[in-house]
Length: 509
Image 1: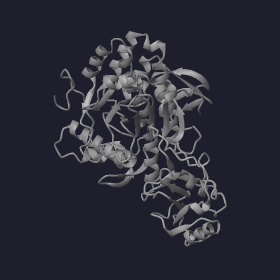
Image 2: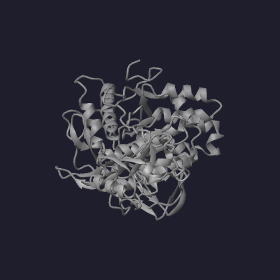
Image 3: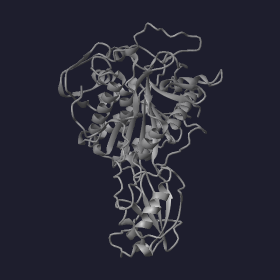
Image 4: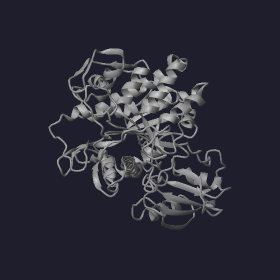
């Protein structure tokens, strides 16, 4: 089967190449129209991608899942999205699955009536202005959805620093002249994956994208989604016109809700739109997991068909297996976040950009997503150990604090307190923040005697500790022999922006 064919021989029109600078689709040699209002072309991205994918969770919960799986596999389009290199995992998250979801702005199959309802016009192109990473642990017990603002300023392999939504366009233009539309599409997806893999430190295992028309159809088939507005919403650009309060929206108003970026009142329209998309996704999840859908076999069939028609996925994504893995997820175990960022800024071309946190912070953030907790090391308990005389405790003192001469002065204080000091030296690093007392197995009593003179120091079994000698590694918290160490500040919790779960039904502006 060629890349342009679906199972059964049906062809699907594929997008033209993109212009990464303009953020709009453009054939080679074609100039984008700068006067065209851009707000009307913003995709609903996040919401329709997740809605399409999560509808396939029904495959795992239905008694006729095998049949629905065949329906999905017969309709879904495939693309060679996963790159052979530049997609390596550098942070550890166990056997979790990472799936990149991309929304495109194609409306090639929409009728004139549907275009009017969508408050838009015909467009066969592909924009990737909204992208999210779905992180699912191996046991399928939870899921994290992390949104990436389209204006995130990132390093695109081979192209330097630019907005994230330019990565797909650059990749598509790297395809050789004469390449098929499918090859151009795959090249764009591969560079986007390489960009996000480098930024997050994660290996991207799978890829999925959904188009604008697909989202419109899904929100209608499911019977609408409940949202809660703190204030009325009216905006001529998106076409939204909704009252305040709890209400069920579908079709054109659902699309307008997730596209709105004007008249909300926040300083960054992109963040506002991401928040609205996340709220809608949460409502879609709650609706799909409700009895109204799970007990309606006809609606399941409609949803799976609509989702599969709208989806393009990588060659190896097993839809039925994914659905079965995620069937135990509940709304309160699904968390939505936005990638940690510093704030808005201007680049050298005076374009508005979003600066993300530094690479170490981003890697730490993604490493924490549903990471398996490590078993706590079993520390010695000096309070329960027998205490011996200081004269029986040989101590080696190591300076890891970065303070010059601290090992010598601490050694003098220990000698004055009756401890035999057998040597002083620098530690393997000067970056110790916490003072440690290390001992060999069986020397708990010796360590307890020293710990009584330095309250708050961490006591542990040391790999290189010699029996009969206790090591004192001084950290920056050391205040002197006979003094308690300075309490370490609580470790910062790395979180994305506006974290919420799918069970949250609070109102938003």
